[in-house]
Length: 74
Image (cartoon, rainbow, N blue to C red; front, side, top):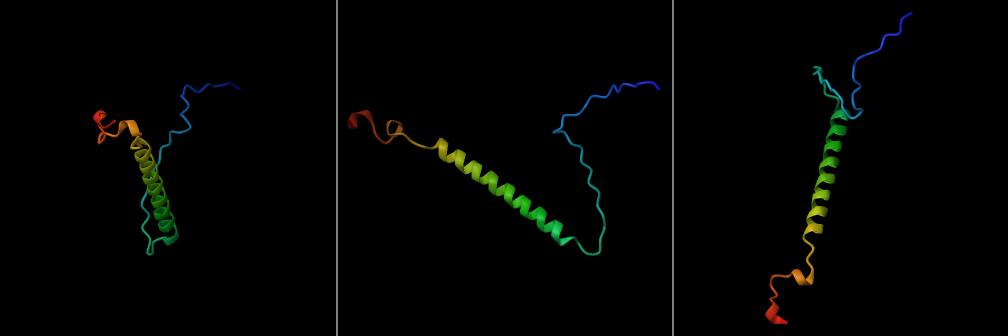
């Protein structure tokens, strides 16, 4: 028996190739649709929370950085 070496490069584990095929059904799978909608809503809520958190951390003002106070007020 001969040992054949494969010259193919191994794909990164994070790289996936997905194929989606439509399957016509009389009634849709309500459970799958509900799970997909819930997953999308959770992902959107997480993205919004991260954006809000980033916005709050970047807009924190220090007393020295307040433009409404001038140096003459001191």
